[in-house]
Every structure is written in structure tokens, then in C-alpha cells.
Amino acid sequence: MVYGVQYEIYLNKQIDFFNDFLPICIDIRKMISIEKMNELYKLVIIPYNELDDRFVQREHSEMYASSLDNIHYYHQINRQSHPEIFKYYDVNMYTMYIKNSDNVNPYTEEMYQSLENKIADISNIVNSDDYLEKYSEQERNVFNFELNLLIEVFVDQRRNHEYFQEIKKIERELTNIKLTEEENELVLRVLNHPKLEGVIYSHGINLFT
Image 1: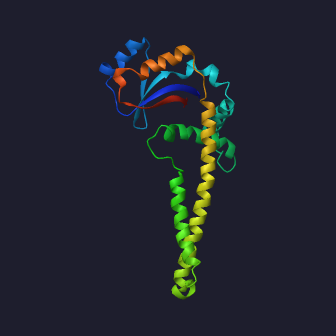
Image 2: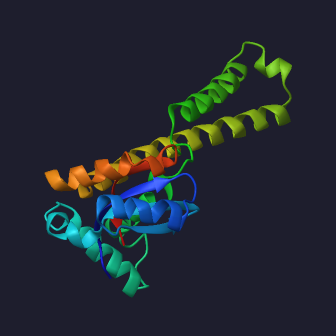
Image 3: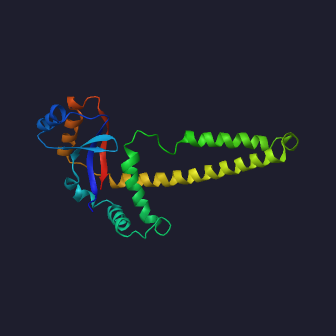
């Protein structure tokens, strides 16, 4: 399999091939490509083969490629037996489904605050002076169950948050590619092209598989 990085521009709607896309290629004097990915359209400005010599110099590039190959070809490998290998699989999933998505970051401080508030509310009930007199044994069992469950979820989500940050850190290292002056000029010409005004959702260097 082929792995690398490429410079992509994500669009928030489809553009017309003849009236929009081809005029851009003519103006920049380069035939770029347009693709559809997860309900979004993207322009590939600098393909992976033009950045490959820089990608292979990244710290995690070899481990990233070998991990994805191992998962693809050796189906007995799983998360429990090879967690480090699946870490790079998750980097790939982050690139494909989260990084350029309009979904909210799955691990936000607002989510943690909501969980903490629920834990605090139930804790106040459990620790109240009249707890034993005010609530039946069945009600107390329900409160204790909910409190323990919420604490377990909170701890687990905090753990997931740390893992998620590690995944993003690896992705940033892999895509930290320095473009040449000519490449930067090309990117700017496409970004500022009038045919793309108001339709650019995000742009940057992304992993390619």
C-alpha cells in the first residue's frame, strides 16, 4: 500500500467541473485533482508523490506505514495484542473522519463539565444530613449506582482524552512538512481563486493512504 501526505483543500459544496474546476487549473497552469471523501469534496493541490521525499523523513512515517500494512495483511493482530500498532491505525481514522469533519471535538471541556456537574449533584444528595431518613434503601441504591457509573465514565473519558491528544500529536508530526516557496505560491493562488470564494471549508497537509 502507498502512504504519504498531500496538500488538500476541502470544500463545503460541490463545484462545477467545467465552469469552476477547469478554469482554476488553467489559471494556475497545473492539473490538480478533485475527489469526494465522506460527503466532502476536496482539491488535491500537491499530491503525495511530490512530497514523498519529505514525508519519509518524519519520525513516525516508517512506523505508521508498517503498522497499517500489518493490520491489513495480518488479521490475527488486534488492539489487545498490539496496542502500539493500532495507535497508528487510529491516526489514520482521525485523519479520515475527524480532522476535516464539521463534527464537534469528541472530548471537550464542556462534556467534562457536564459530567462533573451530574456527579456533584448526586454527591450532594448522598452526603446530605437527612439522606438516610429522606430516601428509601431502593432509592439510595439507585443513587449509588448512578454515582459510581458517572465516576467510571468520567475517568474513562479523561483517559480517552489523553489518548486522543496523543493521536493528534502523532498526526501533526507526520504532516509537519515544509513547503517550498513555489509550492506555497501555488497553494495561495488556489486558495485566493475567485471560483473558490465562500466554498473552502478547510485546507492543509493531510495523510494519504
